[in-house]
Image (cartoon, rainbow, N blue to C red; front, side):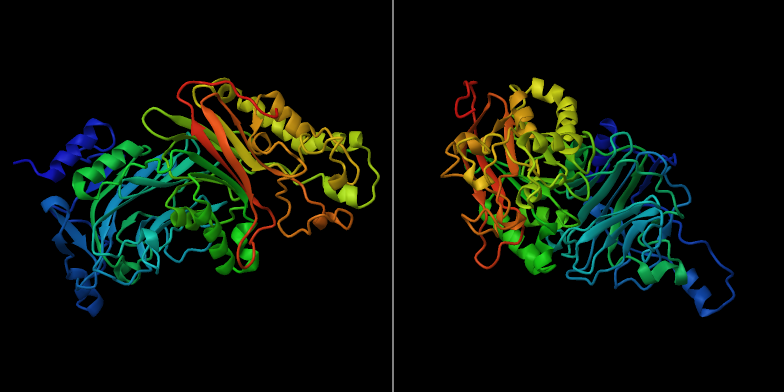
Length: 543
């Protein structure tokens, strides 16, 4: 009778992910079911205690679906990681996938697999899958110029006594790296200009630290079904593999719980860490959870994307150090536009029939038009508009030019553009609303250009009264009604959620600027709810 393990291998071979027999270096497969496995290179067996350890053989235990697994847990007398003589080419796209299991609550904080040392200096080339001390898995990789970390929280722990599928996949053609746990793509990183990840020899069950046969940094657990291949992974293949092995642990398909699609945009000011690395982050998470968004566009992510995504049970797309998108729905495709410091996007699949294109933006913080106004520079409105051209206006024109194919198809796949635009709107700075703007009425070019591309300002559409609903997002700490002191007391609406597409109808939009103790960012968040219109209807409103 064919085993489930064998059936899984044949199925994955049929869809092109793995080969059944890994005879080539481009496709390495270790299932530990039969035969001996290679370890570190043998030394001179001279009868010493060191040599006697080398004579020991690795321990095996029950693996996945009736097979056996390599046991490097605390119950194994000898815990020697495996050295791969022939690994894949790390100059090209490649993937690493494996299953791990530990004894319940087993202590962690060591390597799982990689081609560099566990305690490597920053900027040293190579990749490493490892277990954090909090029990969660993690990945570090570097081309020697830039080092990336994916460090999820204990919500992705692996030390619970069950097998877990772990994988990461480097796709040089699409400039991204994907991270998988238990059949689900948990995160995607954009990695422009990523170089080779070649380093030392590839080790399974530990790292390239070879002192005393690598046992010091050996994984405290068991490994099975280790695979390396010379191609990117697909979300469908990883889901099929895991669900075939563990059908009772299949991830539930995301479902719409409320009948609406809730978008939230927020510049989180380094995830609130200016109020404390833990306290500020906790306040940020509290606000996000209370808002209950489906899709979030973040600005100033700065190393906290994985924590925020885990807290909301979302998939993470890290566009760069600054920008990120969190989504409860699967990210089907990532979109590279302009400069990853300023922009990035994704196609998000809401269900089998509906998709949405979401873009997260941060436009340049200069010129400081609020500072010019409050600083007494006496610039005219025309001069303020002219000042915008080299930075924000030039940036948005280039971004919109690159998004033209998506905008043209917005009635089929609606488009959301949200972010911190660092500038005001011509819909607010009108001739009948000059008091809050120290007498100025300005036809700001960025918002006018958005309007010319038929992108609708969701907040102003739903809150057309600029006097009773100013919608200021800069800044939550300002004193209402005082406009004549300095930049910190001249509020403005600089964060936006724009949309285009007849299939979306905005329902509600509000500014979020409250926390019961202290709001953790210098920008308020903006939230807009949308309904999906099955039959396209004409848009109306203030614009």
